[in-house]
Image (cartoon, rainbow, N blue to C red; front, side, top):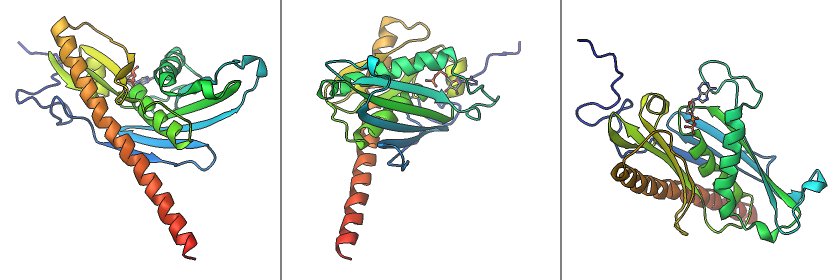
Length: 249
Ligand code: ADP
């Protein structure tokens, strides 16, 4: 009998894009990519590409939204019409409104909001190309852009999805695995504070599977954190080099 189920993991334990079960997609993070924002970052994780711009802390309009004891964080996650195969309407969808909220909630615990009462911190996320894991890539890049804007933070927030595909726990799902796999579980984590700021689960895992998936998610976030740190360090060293060149005339 012909098996019409799509196979996502080979007998040798390789995934649709040739990765091992625990392997992240290649991650590239660039800091300070936009001239007109206070902070910015670009992330490419596999084929997913996102740009993040941060403004603030700045005067808040409309004023009546101001919070007397802390900064108001506003976040917009938006997918460009060309980010998916079939042109997406530029109008915000329910999914984008929901993701804007959960990304904001994943970042807020890291930000020292009480230092900037009555101001706003605005985070704009533009998905340029989507191939799974965009909410996690958004959290990862946004926390780098917040650091680049000089906003005081308790820690960076690193994020990565894990899931279950063909009965196996896998790390950093691509779009095909997200669509045809059994479970998708995005996790955001502050590696130094050891605090989870986002945990969602689409699908069902046994207790043992959850424990394995959660452990792998934390370890993936720790790896993502290294990419974030390296990107920020690289940016700082470029600034130092430019300053040195300028002072040498
Ligand atoms: P995440 O990107 O965080 O995994 P979802 O699980 O909701 O978020 O979406 C998974 C993937 O589905 C996205 O990364 C994208 O590749 C695809 N996708 C989402 N919305 C659309 C859309 N409107 N049209 C086509 N593909 C989409």
